[in-house]
Amino acid sequence: PASKLPQIGTTIFTLMSQMANEYKAINLSQGFPDFDGPSALLNAVGAYIAKGMNQYAPMSGLPVLREQIAVKVQRLYGNPITADEVTITSGATEALFAAIAAVVRPGDEVIMFDPAYDSYDPAVELNGGVAVHLQLHPPSFAIDWAKLKAALTPKTRLIILNSPHNPTGSVLTAADMQQLIELVRDTDLLLLGDEVYEHIAFNGQVHQSLNRYPELYERSFVVSSFGKTYHATGWKIGYCVAPPPLTTEFRKMHQYLTFATCTPMQLALADILRDEPEHADNLPQFYQQKRDLFCSLMSNSRFTFTPSAGTYFQLVDYSAISDLPDKAFCEWLTQQVGVAAIPVSVFCQTPPEMRLIRFCFAKSDETLQRAAERLSAI
Ligand code: PMP
Ligand code: GLN
Image 1: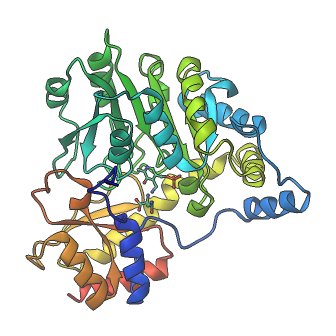
Image 2: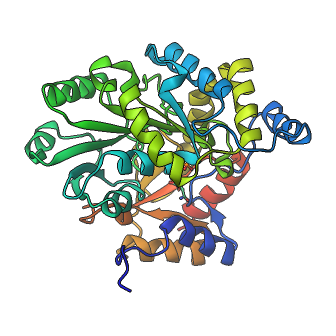
């Protein structure tokens, strides 16, 4: 039978991590830390498993965890939500798919910004929607609000926003949010906020969550993931915060995508949110040190870059080193130099005007040093 997604192959994250393993390269491609989260969290999971907390969690997520998320959203963003507006999912990936599936009907247009994280487009397509890609431009990768306004049609249903932004590291500002408020006023547009890097914004920037603005929240799905915040990407626990009518529709999808999410991890995450709220507050500083170390080590190289404003990714331009297209350059880099990276063109419908690749700096200082040494030698 014909493929439902004929143009989709294996994701670049899988391909590059495989190549990194095959060539024993330092893997700065797929985004994951090479260190663990707080030991209290790790130990709590084991303890809950030993205590027999191993059966289905409630469909919407364990109330203790949903309540702690509501407390966090109130504390950080001033949004007076209750646990009834929170649904726990198997990673942000599931939440993104469920939100899109809940509201996108055949023919609906969904606006996304390139470079766009790779799971948005297939989710839109599988639900019969039409993905409309707007290109962001270096060096700021800021949203062009006039262009966005011009792209709206009567069929536009949803706008997907990702801040801090993977792969560019750009971060929405308060002025952007005012533009967004103007744009959606008197429309029935919906918003999907991919905020998985909510706790990784640098230089004191305030994360502009959709949760901060009642005029935006009333039409939003706000998605996050514990993988990034607790250095546990392999756990695949995420969540979606949305007003009650949207949460009702969201849960109809979640109910049949996965039904419920891993019980002992939810219990352990609820404990750490309650007992160590400062963990998330300290994350910007923790990753800013990594970013600064990586950028200072890379200043000896022929790569050029503007330090990332958020996320644990750094984009670099390699045009002083090679004329290869970015995928071929990443293959060469992995095989010959021993450092794996992600080519940025795979996130774009039209290839970007610069030669850009993405490095993940969520690595031990020693790993970053070894990688930068290799990268500075070319
Ligand atoms: N959105 C973005 C922008 C991401 O970078 C990631 C993780 N790489 C996800 C969503 C998916 O998060 P999870 O691993 O929790 O499914
Ligand atoms: N989000 C991670 C990244 O951007 C990868 C997730 C995945 O491998 N699917 O690197």
